[in-house]
Structures are given as C-alpha cells and as structure tokens.
Image (tube, rainbow over all chains, first blue to last red; front, side, top):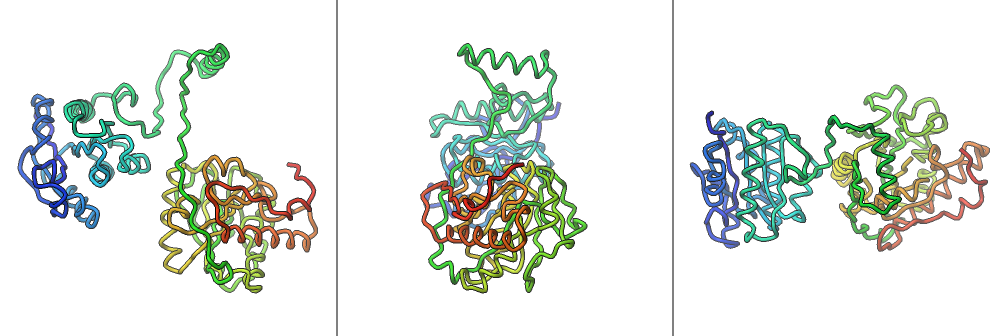
Length: 353
Length: 88
C-alpha cells in the first residue's frame, strides 16, 4: 500500500527557527519532515509519509489566522494529502490554538483526517470541543515537551489507524480527548437493564460510570455593569421562538442551529396575529396570542420613553431554544455579538423560555 | 448564550422562570420570571394589569444591568409577589 501522504504543521520553535524572538515568522513550506516529524514517520514504519511541513510563528498566526489556515489547506490540496498532523503543542496556548484551528479547518473543508496533540487545559482544546469536526482528533499530552516521545507515539498511532480506515473506538480506547459526539453501537443488554444495574450498583456504593456524561459548563465572569442604564442602548434577545407569522426563516420546534433577527423599529408593540411562537418545549398557545410574553416590546417602549434606558436597538434576535446544543448556542451568540456591537448595543435583555 | 454576551463585555439580564437551569449553565444576571410559557406577563390577568406586571418586571430586569455581580446571581422581582402562584 502507498504510504498516506501527510502534511505536518509546526511552529517556528519546533521547526528549529529561534524562539519567542522569531514568533513573528510568516508561513513557510518545507519539503519532507522537520523536527518532531521525523519520529512521527519512524512510528508509521512506511504506512504514512510527511510530504510537506508548514512552519509558522505563533504570533504571526494570531494576526493572520485566515491566511495561515488557507495556506495549510492549499498545501494539503496541492500535495493530495490524506492527513494533517499538527504539533504536539503541549501547554503552549498560542501554538495549541493554531494547531487546533488548522486541523479543524482541514477536517471540515478538505475532509482530511486531522490529528493534533496538546495538554488538556490548552485553550486550543476549546476549538476542538466547540467545532467538533468529524474527522479531527485531539490527543491529550503532558504539560511540557518532556512528554514528546509519548505524545508523538500516541498521535502517530491514532492518525494512522483512522486514516487507514480502521473503525474508530471510544475516546478511552483510542486515546483521544472526548468531544461529546455520540455514536450508535450494539450492546448486549437493553437500556432498561443497564439503568437498573446502575441504580443497584449506586445503592450498594459501587463505582458507576454514566453512559451520557453531562458537559461541564465553564464559568464566564460577568460583564461589568452599565455605568448609566439611562443612557444605554439595549437589545432584546429571546429563545421563546416568537417569529413573524408564517415562520419565514423556517425554524424547527427543536434543535435549531441558526438564529434570525426581525425589525421592531418604530413599532410600539407586537400586534397579535402578526407573530407566532415556534418551540417544541413549552405550550406556545399563550405566546402566539400575546408575543409580549417573550418579546416585551410594549414595556420596553414605555421604559425607553420614560428614560429608564437610552434607546432600543431596531431588531430583536431569536432562536427557538428547545434542545439547542450548548455548542450551537455559544456559536449563535458569538455571531450576534458583532452585529449588535456595530449598532452600539451596550446591554441585553434575554427572555428565555 | 448569555455567557458569550458576558464574554463580549455586554451585560445581559436573563429573564427566565427556570432559574436553577440558568444557574447551572452559569448565567450571571438571572431575573426570575412569571412562568415558562409566559415569562413576561400573565395571560390570566386583565390586560391592563398584565401590561403593568410586564413593565415592572422588565424595569427590574434592566436594573440588574446596572448592578455589580460576582457570579451567577438570581434576582427576584418584587412584583412577582403580587400575583397568585402559577399553576401549569
């Protein structure tokens, strides 16, 4: 079998081009393996081969990420590569972020297998967890490069197994970091039996392992308060599913992945009959009859007139919140932010059902 | 979603009847609302009273935007005590 053509991404340091002083180094493409690429190839024993190494300074990546990501994709395409390996980055934050970003883009856009490795608390892990590209895998490594040998061995093994089409096992068995992707599989016992066994084990005080771990919800410190509500521009966001009658943006009653905004400029209230509530998680009868329960425009207009706050942003934002994936909710809110900021929004009223 | 707004340094008042859920998800400014199907108002009240309830509730929610909080905090608007307990 032909060795799998592989592109490797490294920062300047691991490619042997200076340290922090050279972190502004722009993208450079080298033929063949460089630095940790050599032991990677040694592990593959001819099963895969590094055809090109893309090297870039971590600071350069911070300021030109689109360019670097596009360049890596271009090299992957030009080399007809089936695999991209990045790092390992250990606990280097900027490097980890760069590795995860190039891998996510290559896995999503070029559909190649992309494998990187880093310390589980590296901020790059967040890219992986939020985007969870189907073909990308992140191998946990030690905090520092003293763990290089083990990291390279695990990354090499996993990459080759996936790229050569071996069925992928669970994160624990394969040694990659769980992304929270659920895959169907056949088991001997029914769910009812497994659940009862788990309860009995718990009662006996035996260790149990959940089959559906709940994600942990990271803490984000609160935004500082408004200095003066009376002068501030505010926006309304709602997860109630209130949309114009006819549901023009085709929201589903559950698991939505997009949001919309609808104009309310010059409107004093939400007239009954012009709106409907699309949401599969609560009884929408009241909301459809009186959309103010989810978009309190009448109250906001009065408070605006009375000078309680400065002014109201001319749109309200909506996504029916039923069973929306946490990662999608994060993404959608991130998409809304620049749109609101462009209009000077300083505070938000979020009505959640 | 509220955490992304916080991350962008835009304070956000989360008006919801599901305060424990909002707390678990670590929303920071949580304002207790009337009920899940009608957070801002009460369809069982006459129209004028419903409007007044909504305005009071929203006013109290907006006040939290001016309030310093250290982490997930639940605000219970005084106006909620003036309406009968909700039955689903």
